[in-house]
Length: 489
Ligand code: SIN
Image 1 (tube, rainbow, N blue to C red):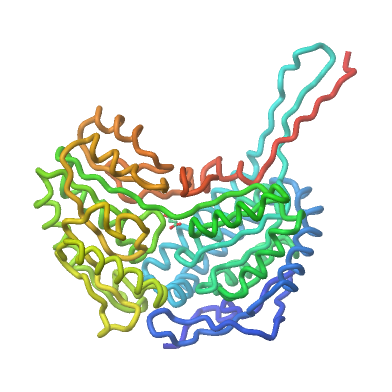
Image 2 (tube, rainbow, N blue to C red):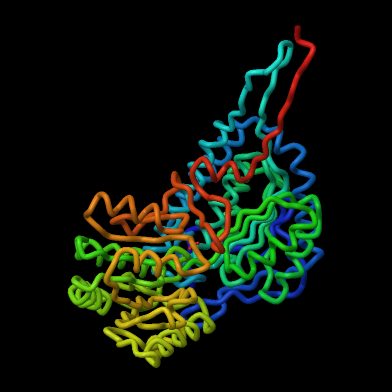
């Protein structure tokens, strides 16, 4: 099906470096529709030369962009936000075509992305420092906040607009310049966003984007890792890659924001509103087909409410409409690629082989295409199963029964990860006890939809460090300079 955009020029197929669309290199990377494998277009399969050109441009632009008054940077970022919202339909189509999420969700993601751009446009004017009372006469002491410098942003495929927005908007707001490598599966949305940023007035060199295949990505990123002019890396993706970036950044001591893997627990206590818990799990687990870092991966349900919860959840999940992103009735689209479906299938099969029972789903949907998997609920899951130890990143909800609060907190925390955790309870004392005890950067209490531009998003333990969104999301792009003026008496 042709991609009918109101503005066909939003579909770009070149790198954007120093304010120009650059076709080099000759090597190309096909961008495909995950539902069918059909090519949408091709983008450059870049290497070290393009990475270096982008970095040279960002480094040169930093000298002037950092001096642009915050109010002017804010005005440019706000214009970017307006343009993103004005092109919500086209951007939503691009997202759902290259990533596979249903069109309504694609458009929803554009609004979500814009909320971060708007927020950081406003935050740009609030980069206040401090005047520190001097401990001796004749001195004035200041803490100034300065942009860290060139930022390398490496973004994932699951939210091609939102993840770009919440990395690039704060970088621009702080006065940093950016080199960006979008995910190989979904570069088109990011190229369209960069075009709109340019139209909004982001000067040449301030925002540069280089596309590359999975194979060529290390060549691009190594240039940025090795170069001391890159002062910060911001990355969303897997924990092994995050650790690699941290190790490789050590020689030049770059600042890092790492939003890495999760293994979120979702706990339903027997004092919970079971219907609300079912709805919360539906929102948290099946958003983007379960391909979300904060998706519940392990669902713990207290024995007294287990059967009620499991039966209601299975009925809701069985009713989900699976289909192509372009079908307005679809609620779950295809998974991003073959490897993703293989992992989901392996997790479900492993759980069943170890004694779990399929309440609904539990199979591929070849009648729709090779990348579709049926939304699934499994009962009788336990900690030995792959789905309890690894992030499934798909529409599979494994349910585990538990008896006591201490037992479930220990189980929930028994993972190296700590991005999100959820629980449902109506007991006020339990709510604060459990919220305090969960080892997690984000906790949802009687709520399944947590992310918001005004909230700090990020993990603890091996889910990474740094925060995106909120005032903390700007701090990650700033450092503090202490200035002491003497001889004033
Ligand atoms: C993610 O999956 O990394 C982001 C999810 C979100 O913003 O809610």
